[in-house]
Image (cartoon, rainbow, N blue to C red):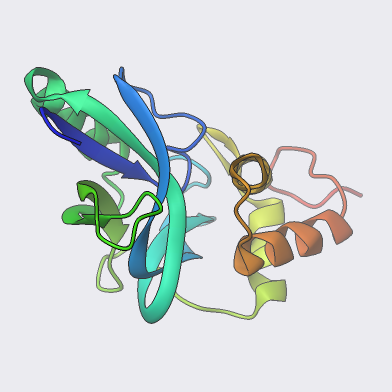
Length: 186
């Protein structure tokens, strides 16, 4: 991981980075768990009816798998400007060690995390309540249920097991299909 900077995707960046990259590596960061605790009024919901997207929460023994994208140092500023705009709803950049299977980190990655003190943060709730919110929310980037499904499918394709994501997917599926309006079907 030299002569390049690395961006870590653990949510929609896994299937839709939206920027050019030179390398893609599957790996993980330690001490963080992926959770649907961040509100989204700009992509997967709207003001007054936010969707939920993933952020990371500190958890000592947790391991969060995802994808690291290598970008040239020459393109780093433009990639970060793009991601700052895309992740403007409460996310902030942090640099942390990245592991690609070895016991020692292979380098540092830039990670966007929405901390609990941002105005869009929704925090923990019962899985059934989060599932209902995801099932009914939709925004400019599409339905929140689609975001959940694409994340779950992407994690399966990487061979990653994530109980939180997969349990939410099961619960949303039990609620039935969404009509895409953010309102329950009749």
